[in-house]
Length: 251
Image 1 (tube, one colour):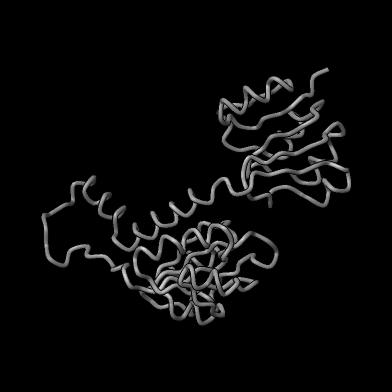
Image 2 (spheres, rainbow, N blue to C red):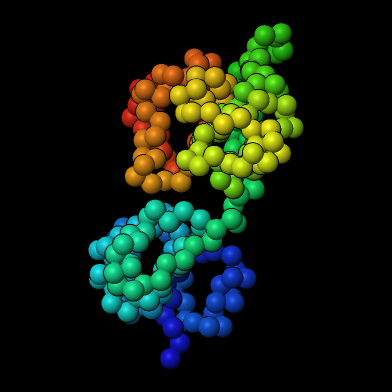
């Protein structure tokens, strides 16, 4: 009998076609978000689950699906999966590491340049018909070249962001749980700093930490208060690394 697999969202067609040669797939399309109850209902009788980061795979799901043998996450982060509960049941959990490193670094720089040069803001203004013509100081934006970039979390993505920053002749500070070897620091032009100094000195702060209990609300009121009033915060890590309520009040 073929293995039964629930695929919670439509993904790359070639991947699905390859998987269909090995298993019988239940592919869900046009589903924006799942609840645990919906996943439990659809996962009954399935041997495997191919999910994404938006799917809550908690202990409740795992305990309610006795045939489940493997949970495969279509993405790098896996904080939405209860690993302890899966381990107790002997369920294998897999992810796809390093597939989004360069893409995430690209998007980090897209956001950084956007806020510095007010690109999206200007686009909205033009589309709303509020463009009055050129003026020397109108929506001037902020220089990026030669400024200080602080990177919190210097894993694969953090290093990819740093490589791009060298093209802008930026001074790059970084903070990470483990300091990088000196050879890598020299190669990328990095300067190790504690988090307080990094926040105080940086013109741009970019977050690239994994989401763990230790990084939950890593950036809160105290940390925002240490940043320059003119500084920008870029978060392409998990949202909860920043205390959302504090950030909303700050805005």
